[in-house]
Image 1 (cartoon, rainbow, N blue to C red):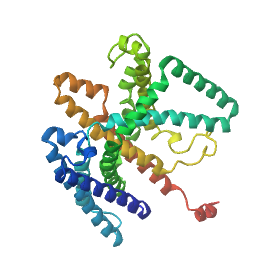
Image 2 (spheres, rainbow, N blue to C red):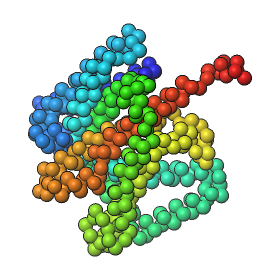
Image 3 (tube, one colour):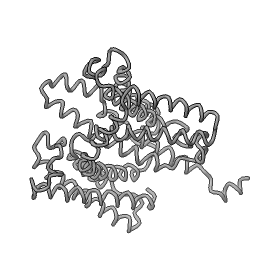
Image 4 (spheres, rainbow, N blue to C red):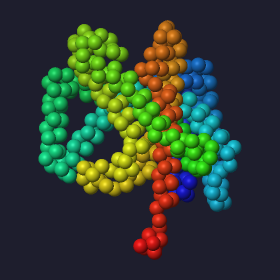
Length: 374
């Protein structure tokens, strides 16, 4: 990995992991003293083995990540081009411990936040379109305005936004603690993935060779939820209370549609890892069109989401397995919300994208070489 990338990634891993260790220690020693920490939902380890076990494992995992970072920094200072595989295995295992002790219920919170961010992104994209292609942009802006009017007048959008905003404020402590866990795990796994390189043989070569199929499969994981939410526009809603409840509360129907839009956007962005617009910004984007997409702009968020989906998906399955209807609950979560599959596939797709872009850069001639060749 380039030294300019290695140091920042390791620094993020160290800071986030140290935060995880401190919070875990506080929850162990001062149980009941800090309300914001006591109200956190248990994660996978907490659900299976209890809160004390979860905090103990979280403390150990956080310290382990910090230790891995210290060793990696020392290796970098000696000019080592790549770390040994035992160190990379230790890094992944420590990241897994940190991720498994993340507070439960983080995917719903992240889903709400991302879904409403998508709405803001649509507005920003429309502005860029208007600036680059005014006629098409005005048409899209008009359609967007009509959709907003329908949401306000027919689905009581103001009430929905007010209730969701209040929920975000109450969930800030949980989101910050979860961000430390997921951030530490993501940074250490990202460092391990990029530091491993891309050999011509072995698993890395297989991932790069099949990255299109892996990416498409990952994107299709969004389909069940998107189809279910789209059915809320019909008299036969799936994955919902019932049509009468939705009719009585239009804002609930709007919320489901917004969440479905967020999931659909996640699937489309996943496909960007193998599409041309994942390497160059589309031409219609004013100020950005035609420019190369920075590798980090795609790899870092995708890696974060991959870790979140993987361990959040495991959390969903564990919660379903400890519920009253084990078989039905696990099947529903596994099929309707297949984050347990989407996360690992997205991680592989992101790795394949990173190797593809790295190979692309290695084939680009140096300016001096290009002049000589010309």
